[in-house]
Length: 430
Image (cartoon, rainbow, N blue to C red):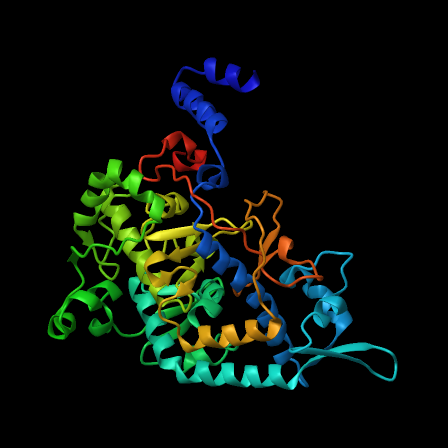
């Protein structure tokens, strides 16, 4: 009654706006509620698989940074959040579940220590070699990331969120960023914030991954970023045909629209326009193409809304274009996939770092059992460190590190293109 009275008794000036905001908030729904019937089983399996790998790799990287690659187990208590191990489970029990990678021993004082097995050490050496061999390609992706930004520079701390996704080394902020002075440099603002700044524009790199697939080499090398008319590859779930039959014309219209290249200046675009949204889709498509798994945490994407000129309600755009992207709702932080890059639960093209992660999973003993995927509550059960580690409390049972997979079922799709705007957050119109 208090909110109703406030809206009804302030009809001067902002009165109608106040009343509208109250109605908007009371009818809003969570993203999980709006999209829980839009799950793609295979990509949910992939999400769970990489969550397990991320926990183990986090511990391996932590040990690698120690002088002798060993650490007291009691010191790992400070990293419970990163490996998502709730009490009363013991860290030592968690480590013993992966004997192929971790080994425990006590010193003369009875202190329990953790180290890596020879297999784990060999894996870390392999990872280092792979990262070094592909450093030039990663430098290209980071440079193109800067070229897409509004001011041609990005906060170094924000780029750190994409370290594992791009395949950057552990010490990239200390050494790697200075290895390519011809492409970028580190600058410090007056407030002490460090930025990675573009040094020189490379026209050969101002070409989207979509353009590379459809244009000739001669055209690509002489092309100036501008308007594009290349449709995005669409991959809908099998049972989307019925919805596509009703809304195919709207989808087709969006596909046929010309749009501004992610590498062109987007200052003149009007926020909320169809041109603005399609250019944002192109930016996200390009950025996901740079990642090793063609997948990112959506929270990390939102960090760059201003720098990349993307809409405030980015999640809405991702859910709306479910033929291009797929949003996995596992945990507090969602992941977005580039659907064209996957066939079932597997990447179509696997880079060496993905193959390396699969080796890690093989030594963990990853296997699938039947389990129902459910939407997580808002209790913050999903945790991610600043470098991109995803953890979920439902996966933290030390008794079983294996992903459990539900049987395939029929997905009942709701229309993602013509959803009721009242389901959006109040922040969208304030």
